[in-house]
Structure formats: structure tokens, C-alpha cells
Image (cartoon, rainbow, N blue to C red; front, side, top):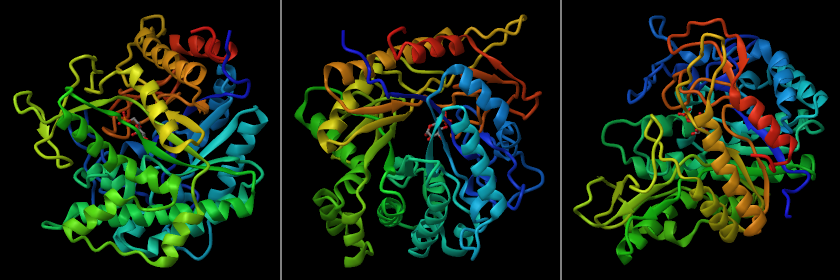
Length: 478
Ligand code: BG6
């Protein structure tokens, strides 16, 4: 019987701002995540002008991993994690983003964290920018609108890649860089690029510029990283939400293709090192004046990624049929986004589609022929703590099991080269989208509620023992 590769990285994933807390300790500066208040299911988080004393900012304390990481890593070890994905919070290293000198206390924190992981045989998988851009770079330069921020990012990456060159092998540059693709959602343009818009600005054009600036920064970092340590594996990080044609109407097929191109633009540049024609033509047709030099085009070519890291949570559907409802999207004539009637959704409306994972693994494998790494996948749900303290999260086990079955089919039947699987929020953390604590993904429960009350005590959910067995059996026992 075919088996998963011996060195397959079964792991867990988080991001610094959602887990660490210690938001103003040891010289850390304010990041984009630090000015985001708590929203709730269906209610957007507010992005405030600096820190306002009357507001609640859930990332300021998060789950206090900053002080508790040693105990948490013991739980990860017990769980059997082979890899732990987190990010370096840029503002611990360069509090303002453009400081002359790096902050030694911040560098030391990640030295200690990586040492602790390695001492417990857990491979760190590190994202350089996971929604933690220094707030000052927004104030001074308007975020990634500006070319200045490219240099700030490259300098930051050079410092940390040098410092951790013997501790970290797997890197990713910008988390879910394509979230911002249509430029319409403030949460995404803020967290991806530290960009807020003025009335009347052309959002799409600005985001194309910011996205390209990030792609250039990423390519420069990939090249530099390989010079620092040729063993480095440096990937991109994409949000893949496969969008299916709703019907067999050829226009629906084209609509799905166009919607996906907008999202693939980012991985196309990351992986192929050039701006695809479909985007160059769109810029020309719309009269967009995107600024890039020959030297930058060369940098793109010289810094293609080693692997494609991506998140997968759900799929979507698009149609040009006018009697199906849905909301309009700009990618193809008269096209609308609508729910897929064939799959169910979570309490937050995220459509659950395990087959979509196998589908996208195949599509991306064919498109780039690069190793792939599923660095996020999971089920955000309300958990109930029983009187005896147990948490019976069978729904989470069902979700993960169904997705692992599909990833195994992609590897063992379809021949996809997959490096690993790090499900999201292995320990409960602050939700990125809503700022809630009660949208939980973890196999380890954290006693804290949406208002910030709780002891922060950790306890194991039913899914803990289940995932332990999955890892122990290298994915055989689901
Ligand atoms: C991804 C992000 O979008 O999805 C994570 O990379 C995020 O930071 C995760 O937490 C789940 O989203 P949410 O909104 O449920 O926390």
C-alpha cells in the first residue's frame, strides 16, 4: 500500500500577532494588527488611528504566547508536531520599520523560540510578513504604495535570515498576498499592504502597484536568502479559494477562469518571475500606470520561489446566469459570485469542500510544477467546555479528516509533490477576520472569551489525541 513520504511535515500553524501578545514589550513597535479592534461574526473590525484608550484590541495580549511559549511547545511536542509555522513580528525587530538598528531584544526572543522548537525536534516554518507591518510605515509612506517600503522589508528580511540562518530552513515572504487582489476590502488592503484609501481613489490600480511592490520585495529576498544560505527553502504564501463555474455554460467557465487569474497573478509572478500578459493587457486597457523599472523586472526573474505555500479553507462559485442571485464581481461580463449549493458552510459562512483541496493541489501542481505546502487549513467553530472540562470537537475532526483524505489522494494517486500540512490555529488564537477568540481552530483549548476574560489556561480537546494518532501513523490512521 502506498504511504505518505517519511519526511512529510505534519505540523501546526499560527501567526505572531494572533498568538504572542506582549504588543509593547521589549522595544516592540506598533504594527498594523495592533490598531485593529475586535469585531464579531458579521461585524467588521475597526482600524483606528493609533491606539485609543477606550477600545479593546484583542491582539495586544492574544494568548500570551510571548511569555508561555515554553509550556505551549511542550504540548506541541506531546502532540507530535514535526513542524510549527509562525511568523516573525516585523515590529519586534524594526519597531518603526525604517530604524537604523535592529532591536536586539526582539531578535533574542526569536532566537529563544527557535532554539526551544529545535530542542524539541520541531522544524520552524517562518513567514516574514503575516499582517504585521510596522504602523509607522503606513504613517510615513502610506504602506506598500511606496517603493521605500520595499527596501525596509528587504533590510528586515536580511537581518533575520542572517541571524537565524542555522535555525530556520523554511521561509515564506508575504502571507496570503493575494487576499487584497480586488482592492475592495479594507481589512485585506490594510493587513496585506498597510493601505487605507481616500474617497475617490482607484483602489484596483493602487493595489496592483502595492502588490507588485511586494512581489519585487519578495523576489529580492528570495535571491538574498539563497546567498545567505543556499539550503534555504523560500516560498510564497497564497490564499487559494478555487472558484468553480456554477454551470456548464461556457461563459461560466470563462468567468471562473478570469476570477482565478486575478488571484493567480501573484503566484504567477512569484513562480515564473514575470508579469503575465493577462495583467499587462488589463493595465493597458484600463490606462493604469504601474511603476516598475527594468532593474525590478530583472529582480522578479532572479527571485522565483522554491515552493508554493498556501492556505485552503473553502471554495466558491461564479455564474453569468442572471436568475441565480449572488453579488456582482468585476472579472467577467455580468458575472456573480454565489454559494455552492452542493456543499455546506461553517457558522461563519465558510463553505466546506474537502474535494476542493485535492482539486486545487492538482491545478497548482500542473500550473507551476513546484513543491507545494499546505500551511493553513482548518475549521473555525464554537467549542463547548463540558462540566468535566472535556471538549468534544468531533466536527473539527470530521473536517480535518476529510481534508487529509483528499490531500492523501492528491499525493498518492495524483502524484502531487507536497512538503507538509500545518493546520491552522493548532492552539486557539485570536481570529484574524473578526478578532474573536471564540472562533476556535485549535486542538488545544485556551480559556479566554471574546471580551478578553479568562485564565488563559490550556487544555486538550478531543481532536488532540486524534491528530496525535494521525501524525504517529504518518497519516494512516484517520
Ligand atoms: C487566513 C490567515 O486568512 O485565515 C490567518 O492567514 C487567519 O491569519 C485564517 O487567522 C483564518 O481566518 P479567521 O478570520 O477565521 O481567523
